[in-house]
Amino acid sequence: MPRAILEIDMPDNCLKCTISDFEMSGSSENLFCPVLSIEIENFIERHKDCPLKEVKSE
Ligand code: SF4
Image (cartoon, rainbow, N blue to C red; front, side):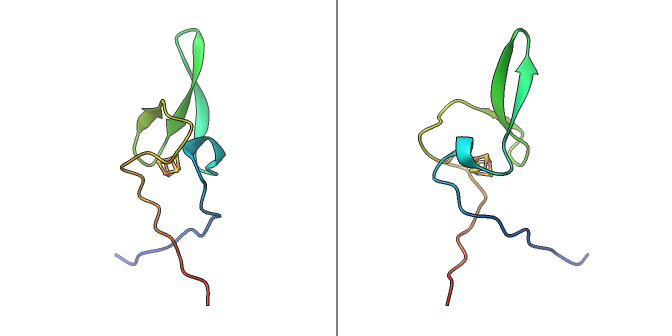
């Protein structure tokens, strides 16, 4: 199958990531990464398993 790349600005942390989103969990709203399918608890840096790869600009 052909592959594709979605180019976005590299976020410093998951909170600033274009892909992340807040979702309701019970009575609270939690930050969720749809790529990793996990709830994000650390807003200070990207998750250790973040799949984003930096693109070097020329
Ligand atoms: S793990 Fe990576 S892709 Fe997922 S929300 Fe965090 S920065 Fe975005």
